[in-house]
Image (cartoon, rainbow, N blue to C red; front, side):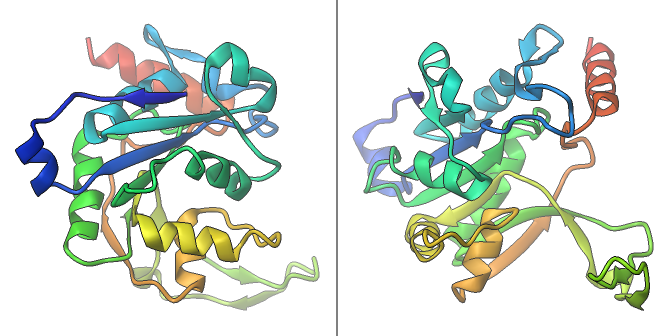
Amino acid sequence: MVLPCASMTSSEQHELPRVWSIVVGAGSGSRFGGLKQYEVVGKERVIDRSVATARLASEGVVVVVPPADAETEGGIAGGASRSASVRNGLDHVPADADIICVHDAARPFASAQLFADVIAAVRAGADAAIPAVPVTDTIKIVAADGSGRVESTPVRSTLVAVQTPQAFKASALRNAHAAGESGVDATDDAMLVERAGGVVVVVAGEQRNRKITTPEDLEWARREVEHDF
């Protein structure tokens, strides 16, 4: 699905960068136990809420869904991994886009202001901008051998929990994914840009921008919508 957004005058188009968004909703929902992106929150599906907000910030939106749903949803078929799904979406973003936002469909409460904040940080010169919130728990680094042995304790003040939408210079995102086509994957796109040597900056995230991962998260989201009315 490639959704055009509100039209701008020719002078506005000349002054502003072309911003497109990719909303990634191609996961199988293995941890959730189903396709969480199609669950209803309030009067809308999770994915539809995320797409609606992305449209407010973008000239166009590419929606990536499970391959089996691409035709019925009018979307773009996802890949075998998150990174592969984003690359499929990138193929449908116009070549002359200046900034590309990538947003997880499972974060239906991200605000239009949050999109604006990450876009502004890229316009200011960063290769990528990501929203994040402080980590409140103490984090331990545990040995990868399964022994449960603690190897170190990072300083909590240097840690943040990262969210989406993430905004990128279009060239930085495309180059990072081109470098990863050999099979390198990442849990978020900023990681690929980091690996490629790009400058990634953090902006303040939103506590309400919670990712729906478990059925308990969905129950929370539905309560949040009830409080809005």
